[in-house]
Image (cartoon, rainbow, N blue to C red; front, side, top):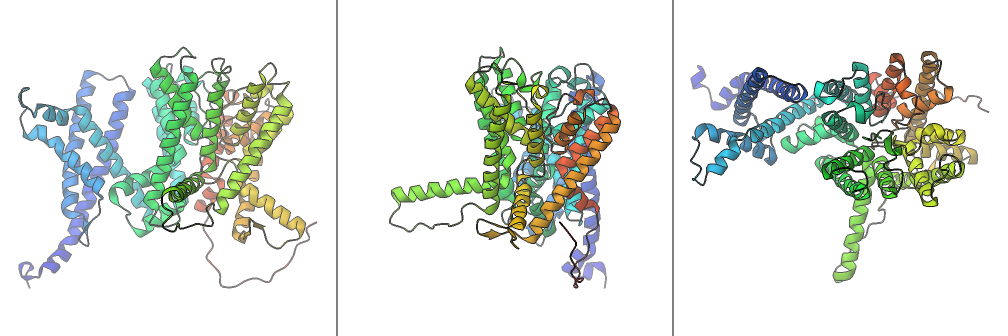
Length: 609
């Protein structure tokens, strides 16, 4: 039977391999074009370019525009699966906006007196075209990264690699001539990019005097992306425009963002981004109110200061644009609102997004309840028994205990020491602020070298504990610390079960908690041992403080960071990366998991105590 005499479904099956090959080539060129476009933007704004180079760049932009038009058309025609489009409504809006860039090409420029002149000029404006190409580039690159999850790649490795790639890109951007005043070495750029991406806050150079406005914007973007998580943003962007993609992709994304079900993936991602923008926006407004007309800045400078410190605080990064961090003389007096706002931003960022979502749903429940009580008593209100889940209760209680104890301890030891000469209210505010920062962020209001030995030791403990899981904080996490204490208490009482709030913790949770703490202590000890060899002139206290601060992504330092040797900087960079990705998560991705066995060995006991 000839090709033309075959039925239509057989024609389709014969042509489908060719279509797949065509789509593969088209998407490969599209991904490459997206990378070239983003690299060209970086080159244009990062270097001082000549007129000839400007013409070359405009040619690249036009070429990428043409490739995106062809690629989009090919996808619309061929990318159909079982009669259903793989794109969401927002993707079609983006494609429509791309096609509207053809209007100035198809139609001649109208006379200024005509009503369509403004419309023609809008779609002809280079900013419009560049914005569309930028979002399309992000869309295509995000979709390609999410598709990697469909290749059965280990999500832990993808998480680690995504942070590593972002760090390398960030270090390259910070070395651009327009990002620094007098240049910066590759190692210092790598250190700063790692610290920003891993939301740590340790720096080897002064941020305000080293980086220009462009460099500081790159730092705050690295903090925002690193705080939210590279794959969180990537997954949101891909799912927003492509839908839920494959089942395996959805399962992998669900594990990375700790969503309860596949149906709530996009809503969970929206919650994360929504909470971030809302809290950072409120924090920015409060910080601006606290510094307005008090620091000799223009309005633009005040708004930039407020935005930078709000993002840095909520992401628990600890970066500041002021020399000496928040211990600068410009804010040390009559700025209690600033320190309280930054403290609560750190706390909200450190308790974790699942806790924020649970609290938001609880607040909405009570609002509905009071609305029903006032206006809708005729109908029955559906009551919920367990508003707060176990994770929320543990994190909130432990956070409160640590903050109260930390504030009192620091206040007692520093009342007539580091806080000497301050008004009583300022002493309380700075004690609270310095109890908040060691657990998650590296801001400081007083020189840490002026603190007593007891306060420094207590800060090391707070840094080790850290914040909540699925948050921007580091450390072993409050959840792990609580489980270990509960298990210790159960063993002391002779109980066979670890229970709290009428809930028994699973043996898996107890085992993993002890494994996380053990691994943390091993990594910290090895790092401290290595640093004593690399930095023999530094005190052991300063080295321990530095290593724990880096591994817990805190960012506090006893003034050792700027004095580190190149090898010492390399160790701290490694600790910051491991601390952000998670040593336990990293090992899960590197070590082959043992297959489940259908047999058990005989049990035996070891002599313990």
